[in-house]
Length: 579
Image (cartoon, rainbow, N blue to C red; front, top):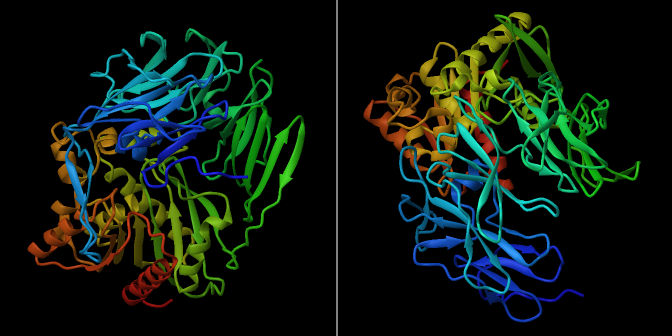
């Protein structure tokens, strides 16, 4: 039976069971603690202003690393992060709906300001003085990943603040010394959170992913970092490394942006094997020679399978299928030789003899594609379509899955090229489908998509007649370091870029209806972004409708979400009119 092993009266953060299953490590009040049979035992004692075992904000939010400590394979040691955030600006988030609650402070580094200082230590489970890891922490500001394999060295991936240089290092836990396994450089930026490095089961080498040849390729390196062979080519559409099983890499890949399949790539160089169909969207996890496949077919739904010992077992789903069946079609348009994918969702009661107002559902930013080959993606689009709109999505330059040059076209200016691509694709689609009434186009998005929508209505009122900006960044100088500096550099390096891409400096251009929706306790894109835009509009003699929700960056309350969607539909109907 179950038993409680951790004192419920103290804070418990990020608990992890040791590999031997005997001990739980967790973080409490900035220190590592251990618990097994007896009461919890404090393993570290942090100095004032220092925190142990917790990933800093930008690592969690922008680098894909949520952990701050890692067990050794033999359960005798723990590698942990040391964080000094004393120089980082403190942000206070409060909820005016609950004035009896004190504002919550947390460290949030803005572009051009101080980041947290981060490095690593290794400590035995018996306690004592940690061994501190020696590497160039001044050069490599960000700790991107830590891997401690069963066989193979404790390995760390570090990257500089500009995110143009990375180093993969092997650590000797006994001394804290490091050995360089490989380095990479990119004049624009390096992407890092794609599943690599992944050590082989016998520790003889590791898998690595690189965009050095213009698109992701998978490489096999020996234990000292030397390249053994390339396992894929740039034209195979590699996207992520899911794991290792049966002497092969399990990867996610596709040569067509909306689709994604899972492939088996043998280490011996023999032919790759598709594990899922080429259409739809599939993802995988692989470990200990077991592969779990998640398949979303084009027609919707999800199928889950486990592959082990050459046998495929289906894991039945108890999820209910959405009652709304999207009518979405995916097409391509040619934009001066560039192929761009477009998803079009029409009303279920579509009348080809009528002309419909258009809603451009947008994200438009890095690391997110919106046109995907699974109809379940478009359930909410169908809701809007059945309210009287034709809903369009498209992914222009700056979005993923189209190669290095396509994604990196946005360096130092995250809006101009993506905006041009969205507008061009919209116009090309309307030329083909006359039912799209381009005299009545609205745009809506959330987060980066909210920013995009705000900028669209400010910069291109001749195209967009109404906009909904959800949780928008309104000035990149107010966002965080790791994300913003990756694409924009710092405000000191790129002052004109920050000015041109700021909604605050463009606010006086507002001519069309704008609805702003933002959670007042948003700890990612702070509510201050929307407040700053409201003030800039007010000073320019302009106004926007504003809805402030008692929510964070995303809105988890289903009742609030239903009300929000209805408000957005009503706003678009009011300003774009009926079919």
